[in-house]
Length: 41
Image 1 (cartoon, one colour):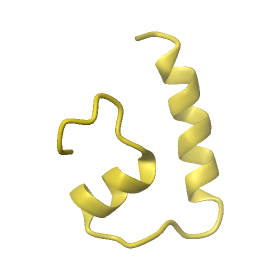
Image 2 (cartoon, helix red, strand yellow):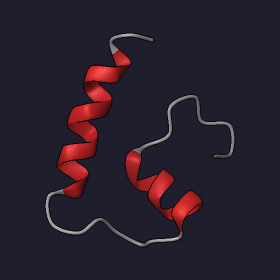
Image 3 (spheres, rainbow, N blue to C red):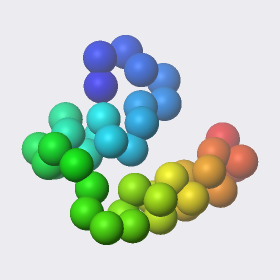
Image 4 (cartoon, one colour):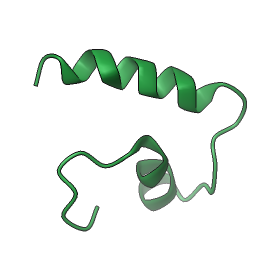
């Protein structure tokens, strides 16, 4: 992820999985989950 400490969900989707964008509510769901996960870091 080119040196990013915490890459964005969209950047991971694009660079790791090769998709250009999320579908429907996927991005909001992932960001919500990651916001909770970041509390444990």
